[in-house]
Length: 512
Image (cartoon, rainbow, N blue to C red; front, side, top):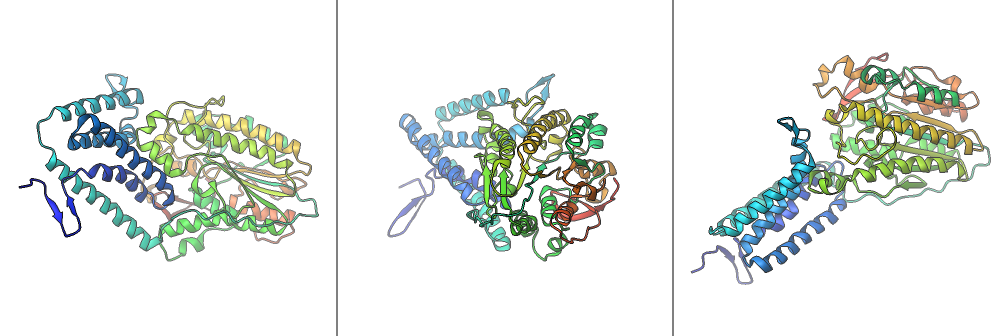
């Protein structure tokens, strides 16, 4: 009489106690991460991690079992390794900075050897146990199936409401025409999270006048009372690049996820670039890693520093790979690449419109003030904890200033025709924490909405500017002055919303 439960039919039998769960749990953490980031991640981005995880688990099982010769003990040890591997980043996030008796234990140099010690200890106990593990195997099989079914339900529910993002569309390069007239190159440079001078002075006690005076001496106009039109990057860029507020997008009777997809499409296939293409411009895009602006299938040419996808970086952050390899080195190289490429654009033929979204001085903190790459891990998302590291923010901003200064000098010196250059922060910083939307303080609004806004508009274009101009009017001004268009200037307004609900706004006073 057999002790293992089996399901039989005429063609095959399934042993329900066999340790299939190691493959289920090699699959589940990646699948869970994917189904919890469906708005940002394409299905194809998960395939390589899934294949590697399942292959590594299978190989580990086969090699270990050559020595242990007990599939149940081998599987449980492999399962323990999977738990430690995929939970490491989550645990690190919980204990980062924690101190015990004055010793900062929330660091990789403590957590990594501690994790290894626990793995060795529990592996030893598993090898020595006399307990039969068949029943445990059966329960872990069931648990793995249930967890995958829950994530699968999330995937199906999202797909029904929003459609499934399988892969990014291939680049569709549009032929541009050579312009006979002398048109200036146009550079639209977003420095993510770059705060206005008064915010830096009030919150950080940092005087940014050296950089601003440099720009003014070069001929830039600094809109020193500027505010961003929206508090979130996706909304801010969608609005500026289409020279309009997002009322039509907000009013659409659809889900927030679909609205965000439409916002991404508005950034990539935008009115500014399409109008400039009609004027004879070649459209260039420099990607630096953030999903919506990293690649653009509508640009004539895309420059992109090869680095991990957003999903792969997220996987690194949540697993033990966090301690073994510093993924932000690639992010740092991507920022440097963008500045280098900007300096090369003036040497290209034909008039060009170049857009780049440099994800800095926004966290993660990749550089010190001298440009040395930081070796220690720092948070990379929008948690207040990242913004609260104000000293690191200022240090990174100082380095970005230096790179921006050398880039401006290079562009101006190499350009045969005086270019148009716009340097903007898409929003300010966010160190004051999360609060209910209707209870957001004036201090927090000032910090988040006040942004850097600097223009180099040669041959009298700067005369059209004013100190409180907001980004929505940037290209209306440029098209009217340089291309004889007749765009009506919009009233300068600002709207605040939060990541938890992109499209629920409060209007912000225009004179923060």
